[in-house]
Length: 51
Image 1 (spheres, rainbow, N blue to C red):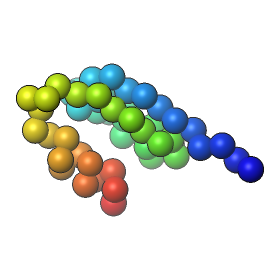
Image 2 (image 1 turned 90 degrees about the vertical axis):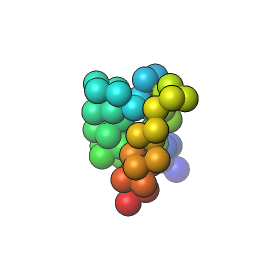
Image 3 (image 1 turned 180 degrees about the vertical axis):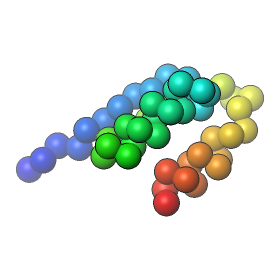
């Protein structure tokens, strides 16, 4: 049974972190991100990742 690859990206909703998160997701990783509670961008990013 193949194992799911997992990436944890801290600061995943800003600049470099967002790019890394997206690239890891595109590469087949299950991505977990942390972000600042004041960042409202996460909702649109989450919808994009679900698509």
